[in-house]
Image (cartoon, rainbow, N blue to C red; front, side, top):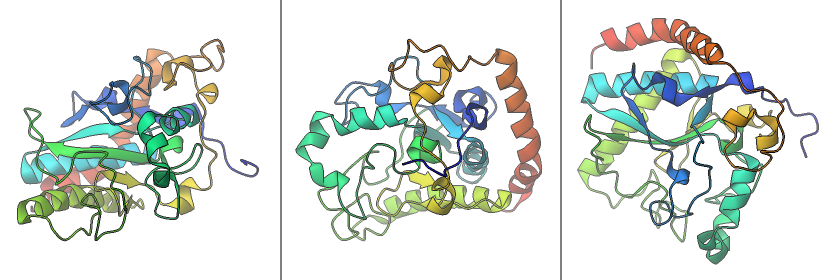
Amino acid sequence: MNYGMKKIAPEALVPMDIFTEDFPLRIDLAYCKPAPENIFGVIYRPQARLWLYKPLAKIVLLAAACSLKNHNLQIVLYDGLRTVEAQKRMQKSPIVQKNPGWLEGPTRLLSPPGAGAHPRGMAIDLSLETAEGKKIDMGTEFDYLAAKPDAASNPAHRDYAALSGEIKNNRKKLEAAMQTASNALKLPLLALPQEWWDFRLPEKIYGEYAPLSDADLPVQMRMTDDFMDIAEPEDFPDAHFESLKNEIYAEIDPALATILTAAS
């Protein structure tokens, strides 16, 4: 299945928690929690962290800065890298077993194992909240999966019409922040139509890469407890993440300065 696809090196993945002291964002890794706190139940191991492919990580950081400047809001991150093993667990969850249609068709609401941007760290699920951690109204909860994914039936769809002006405006704030960031970095970004919380690199990019298995990653980067008996590849030292953080800051500084000095 992965013949001819490029392989994503673990070095290309960024743990977003290393930025929380410097940027207005909070990590709330949804699938570490039991049901009903998320609809699927526990998917990730307790030590799991939220990882993103480096270009998408840079977009999220700039979007957080933009949200604070323009609306005095911070970004909350729910999910990023979802390895093949995590996707398999999700597929086997009781709620998905009761709703097999979620996995079917071109407008499916869940990707089968190995498909989509999440198993490449190239999709982010996120929302906006106040500095005190209070959610703003987006019309549905994160991970609201409708029986039908079309815009007329699905209140999570970006084009769903029967929303209040406040909710529409809140969604626009999030989408504008992400789009402003992607434009500033000259990186393409897709706002997934059927889920207001999902932003990803387009398929023309993620489709070039093979999905990641926990077996591809150091222990410290694995999302599930599968393959914990395999020691390779080796964990990265703390210095690696400090160097990665400094590298990203240097790369986004010009765009960040432009965003922070631009008129709201």
